Amino acid sequence: MDRFVLWDIDGTLVSVGGLGAEVFDRAIEATLGRRPPERVRMSGKTDPQIVGEYLEMLAVEDPAGQLESVLEHLERELAAAEHEMRGGGRMLPGVTAVIDELAAGGGVLQSVLTGNIAPNARLKLAAFGLDGLLDLEVGAYGSDHADRRMLVPVALARLAELRHVELAPGQVWIVGDTANDLACARAAGARCLLVATGRAPLEDLAALGPDAVLADLADTAAVVAILRS
Ligand SMILES: [Mg+2]
Image 1 (cartoon, rainbow, N blue to C red):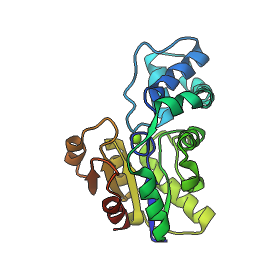
Image 2: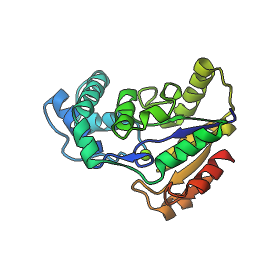
Image 3: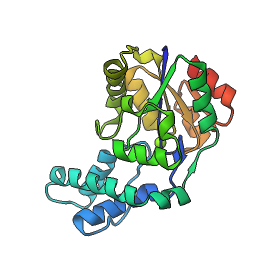
Image 4: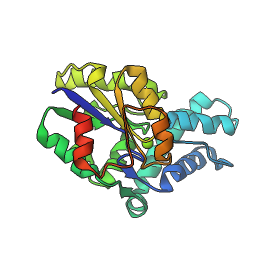
């Protein structure tokens, strides 16, 4: 095993459409009895980070105490919206072909590094049949740390502990769609491929100076060549 590919989920593997932001409104309403008056920017942030910003916007008392409760509701609301997620969401172009090709060639372990709390990461992947293709036990999640930049070491530690594979950060590829994915890779000394299938346009992502940047994952051979390099 000499490469560890950590996939971001939203905007990289799948798009869940408007539901991605809507579940936060529902979870906050279920916890606090009111919806946020406006939406926070979510791209590349972790779920606890997003919820923390909402709690600050709403000026709730005891935000630390409410955070866990909102995250529990977030899990419940997404699980309840599984049908809606399938109907309004989609897998992004080229995803299964790249994952299959990397798996078939050997030498590459694949998991996720995502801002989603772990149960919601699994729900989103399962909705599009991707959960069985990745080793989710060695992934890193928003539920592990609110700061995405802390998450590569979490995944590497799980890989060592659960799969007895010791890899260096330089053997890790982060694949994501935002500046926060790149910051997370840089903080750990990992490399980063950015894809313009989320909100950020290709030229904006390219200007950040990632190790590689693509419009999408449709060119299987090109993506695989990058992630095996
Ligand atoms: Mg993303």
